[in-house]
Length: 420
Image 1 (cartoon, rainbow, N blue to C red):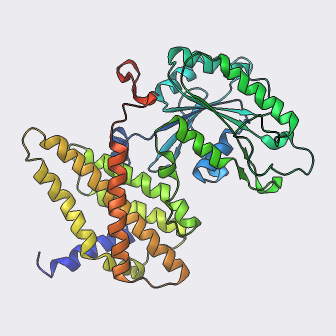
Image 2 (image 1 turned 60 degrees about the vertical axis):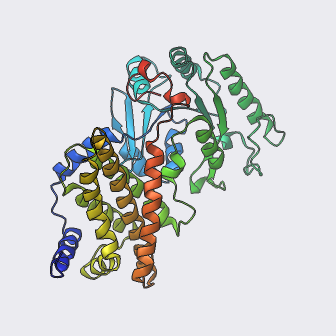
């Protein structure tokens, strides 16, 4: 490459970031095609209206409750789904609404959700002993799929507290017989737990008690039992949701925590695009530019001529060299006899994911320092990028591994596509 060509290439990248010209419909179509290559895990929430399903989603994702309420989209007559993040999801929540309501037959919705889900979560208020419709649905599902685990989330614990009482500390609900649990609440929890001893099937049933409240409710912490919920999810599934939704231990601030699932979502989408047999070379940069604008919006620091030049210039050859290697590597791998096409797709997917993940994490570091008024050295950014590239590559390859030893992946030939 001649020295005079490099500024031209950097200028094109800078112009793309300042004034994206990608066809939104074409990019949306590419993202849809990519999602068939890298579909997000699906969590099926079964519970009565106002049982706490939306609060559970908010606690897991950190997303605003208003955004969640507006984000649900119908998929059957009464079932709906919520993708998070919306543009490039890392997880999809399915909600079967109306259970227990008069003149509602949930069979169609149950059949649809059952065919899509990777993890079944039953949500019930801890003090609500009228759960016959929920148990009926769970019993029917377990008769058809006896190996499926169920995570039972007992919610709204504070409804059983005495006036002005606080959450019991330390968290005592790992054992519902713990004497630290208020007596009325304990009796109700043990009764609900007992129902599941008669449920058909042999899959694990894990119970967890939570109380996710609003600031105005006056309880602290507002996400009481969240750690126990994560432990429950990890106990009954191998989906790696915590890594997808929660920032790593090196997170700098709440902005970075909010940015993390967006970065992961775009990197998964990039992997899907990279794995497609015929790829428009403009789509990956367009996807990355869209991600950078999303991150800038989170940090409330829109890209300007100065910041764009500073960020791209600081990355320099390290980033652009990886970009060129990504395409060159795929072309060379495809020349390998017999395995070339498969290896090429794997390389295209993994390198696209790692490249996008690294770019996103580096942008977050830059935007965070920009927000704090702290200058960033070029070598520091390159180091952040190199470390994030390795982490993104490992994350994608780990998530791409077959997991045939888990309940979710047994007897796949007997299950509808996308089932538990």
